[in-house]
Length: 383
Ligand code: GLA
Image (tube, rainbow, N blue to C red; front, side, top):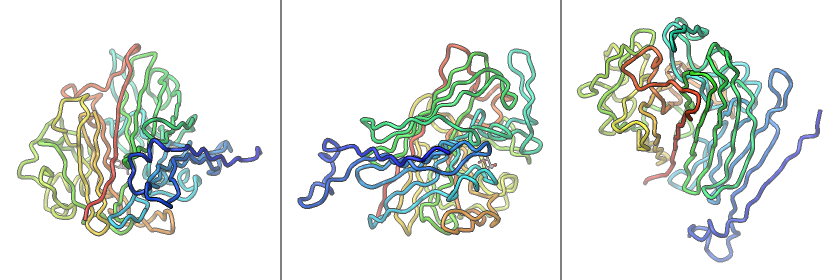
């Protein structure tokens, strides 16, 4: 086995510090952006997995694995300036390989569900694994969260960054076309994790990439006291297998109305058919903005830590999932046993089952076109 090399790329950040008053005080050592690379075990074929830690000048950190493009840790300041990990996950790659509900995952080729694992494109029917019976979920048995990505780190004008690339072969997991995918993760100087996905294909296919971190802004306990605001007048109700019925339903007068900030726990227990189907929130909101335009989708805050998360994207939909399938059977980082609703996901994406829903924005990618999805998770705090 090759000797593992620990590499630290420390980048002097005089220009960055110019705008950062905290670090300008005399006598304080100048903070720097850095990118650290460390071994993270091996995948099931024995290939070494690398872990990259992006650190910005103020001390925030994002750690990403070359296996699955997983965000394994995300350290952000609370209202007292204390850094804490705000995502769920594991200490080692073996645990991710063994059993994960998509902790921190890069999701593809198709995020969320495709009804009965079937869709038709240009007159041809394609069949996918029904890995979330009776439907296909998150790219199949071996989705993009379970493949090895080629990683290249770089210091950019925006902050330290990691570029991951992967070519998904024609027919992989049942999807047509060789799909070349690029995912760029950047930790910006203002404590945002920016994800930029692009993809091209050599045959018409369907693409819906997203990110699946389970956030907990307090770093412990359940997420019911987190306050959520979602910029959506409508959502897409589902059937009992979580496939959209096709209706765009007004949130007005339902527990899905998050236009006014409301805690997750306030209405999650209501006697509501949609909440029953999802075992809580596990739905797609139709964001109030033209598709393709970057805009705020959600704002989440947590009172004890003061941490605030703002989610922006150019996608038309947002899947808000309240961790309803966590059940105390998985033990994560630092021995935390993940109980019911200990984390929530905010997944900007196209609507679930779009390949079978003619009235939803299209997810078809043709040769010569470039798929784009930009997601920004921006952290701050309030007192
Ligand atoms: C998504 C889905 C959920 C669930 C999780 C993973 O958020 O919408 O139903 O499958 O992924 O457990």
